[in-house]
Amino acid sequence: MAELRLGPLLRYVDGSSATVWVETSRPCVAEVRCADGSGGETRTFQVAGHHYALVQVDGLTKGSTTSYDILLDGDRVWPLPESRFPPSVIRTPGDEDAVRVSFGSCRWAAPPADEADPVGPDALDSLAARIAADPDGERPDVLLLLGDQVYADETSAATRRWLAARRDLGDPPGSEVADYEEYTRLYYESWLDPEVRWLLSTVPSCMIFDDHDVIDDWNTSAAWLADMRATPWWRERLLSGLMSYWVHQHLGNLSPAELATDPLYAAVRELPDGTDELRAFACKADADPASVRWSYRRDFGRVRLLMVDTRAARVLDEQARSMLDPGEAEWVREQALDAPGSYDHLLIGTSLPWLLPHLVHEAEAWNAALCRGARGARWARFGEDLRRRADLEHWAAFPASFAALAALIAEAGSGAEAPASVLVLSGDVHHAYVAEPVWPSGGPDARVLQLTCSPVHNAIPLAIRLGFRFGWSAAARALGRRFARHGRCAPTPVKWRKTGGPWFGNQLMTLTLRGRSARLRLEQAQADSTLKTVEESALTAS
Image (cartoon, helix red, strand yellow):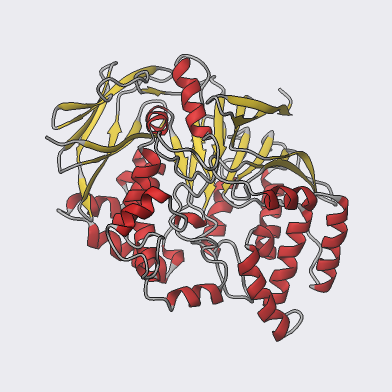
């Protein structure tokens, strides 16, 4: 009998269809059977000895809620026997519904129930507890996970014990994961957490990777990449990271129409074993990052979401550094400007914040100038070393890309058919804040904000708290201007000010978008498994 090893994860949902992801113990037919008579089924596909299915559910009714079961070869395997959670459901949007978008990043796996949690309560566990306590109450229409869904380079004590039983941790990469099988361990540890497992089965999710999904500061620079490629373990780590991301996260980001035209998805499903096909895809992505697009677009009524890859799509040549390669940048531009007037809110999901505390921004722009050679070879060597030690690789470290995004936001947010808001959603920096840009020559008509929220579940060292508080201060801005002068940095095309935060804790932000109004709520996880509201405000008027 086939067993359910991981999942189900409810991924894509629209007015009439959905996709549900599962991993099973052996080849089988996976079926989603809904209480309202809708459903779907498909055979599993195989990668590296693991069996997966992404089941397309058809026949759903717009504006409805239906519970569902998972069956493998006709045997019901979900809900789990004696589950303490309500039935998992698929809710489809109606024409006039508000859209609720919850987002955050940086979720280190919670420890087993009998162990103390070294980083405090998990915000996703708390969200699950609230929804389970009131299944008919408010819940997100989509959960955006903005990077670091797994930590390949910072494994838990339990995973280190598992790795030690498999290989000698004295050999590189030590207690970090090395191959596809070890990546699957990370996903089991993260997604088998009972609360998170149920939450992801009943709230649709969109995901994008950040650095820790592969390694800290992934693709920081050309020199960094050359050093990594010289190690004996890097290639297998990167290929396994991309392969496991494609299986566990990327597939579920796609709509049924996109899946139907995806040649890799078709090939992997048709083959008895898709490992070699998927590995060849990952090899091509490594050799030519521009050959693969991990970014994607989702529309939720009159809310448009662009989830942007800011890791694999980078151009690392010091004289032409760019957060996005030219093809990726053009795709983002086309999606943002497509059909003006057809959306009321534009959400740009980028794991790395566009607007940072002023000192951090100026330090990164200064460092980029040094590495580019603005102050000579000796300063360039110093700059490269500092860039790696201090993680100086956000949008500010790619000045041309920072300016290009500012220009695109201004264009998308201007004119008679401008949306009410353009909101940049980010994580990564282990605190939360709201920042508002100002264009010196007159800005867009839309309200533009940087909304940053992390971590969902991770440590927040005192140095981070003190550093980021100082980074927003007037003294820090003065110091930042000194960095900019030394690096001979060009002025930024926008100025900005912090309008909320900084907030520190395991936390989630939620946007409620109704018509042209937008409201923001920030909630932090508490020790009693509740979420405490620490900020709630209107971002745009009705």
